[in-house]
Length: 396
Ligand SMILES: *Cc1c(COP(=O)(O)O)cnc(C)c1O
Image (tube, rainbow, N blue to C red; front, side, top):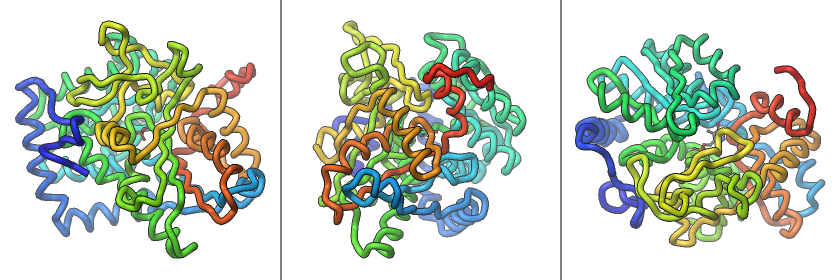
């Protein structure tokens, strides 16, 4: 779906300072070489299979299907990957690429801490230094993940600028990369930022839809009718959609975090409430205030709490190829509890946004239809916050 030089329709591009140009050109050149290199791909596949536990299962959720009384529901189990989410797919790819480029140091941004933990993990495995930028507010909300990163040997730097959350961590990591590109690779965590990141991260996450397609063809002999995934920056969603984009019968649905509702100011639903703009090196849709400043965003889910969306999603939205629907905190929490009780699977609160939308549409579909929901991660990390949401303090 890529048009000229990292553009997706009018979106994407490279809106970066002169000082970063060399770094992105070096990265693009290396990626163009290694993406077609047999040795690189074999090494990455071995890591994904032996270390990250791929292929992840495609599980027929029979009890959920019966409870909803409509379409047959499959769950793509990215929650069973090493480190507990889809983030590891991208991180192993980028860390291996960085290593081939002769880099010895990984830097990363993180919100909830899942991407930071995945980076710290890959750095430990590959003997690299790792520095993770994390909004100070998030270091407090996600103290356990800060400990995990430090345990894995990474340095965590709390970012105090702006709202001290994910967008500020991205800005700080970009600043750091500008000042130190010789030995450092910026391991970006989603399909965002300047070209070539949206393409690189998409390619490393596309393993999700490649597996869904072959697993479902083997089980059911046909393609799904609907694929549903949650959207923060959009990496697990584009990974889930990618190999179905040309299959026009497959509906692709991205679930945005509506927070307290798209009519409130406490939301992170970018396509549903945002406007076109330029931020973090790319043109896309962003939540903005009346003056075009990036608006503060809110969601119960720290992993979806980002004011933008990857440029390829913005393009799929413009084309009408994918739909982007808002899901509130309350709907996501209900789905978190419902999936736990019906299937014995506790999803990440991010992934619960996708489950919530399936709960809305499955009953209206006939029983010969099929939905695949990507469970982007597991929910252990969220239990204390959801308990708090329900008015219970479990002293994490
Ligand atoms: C980070 C994260 C997300 C959001 O990121 P995307 O790039 O939109 O996939 C979703 N789910 C989980 C479990 C995450 O850790």
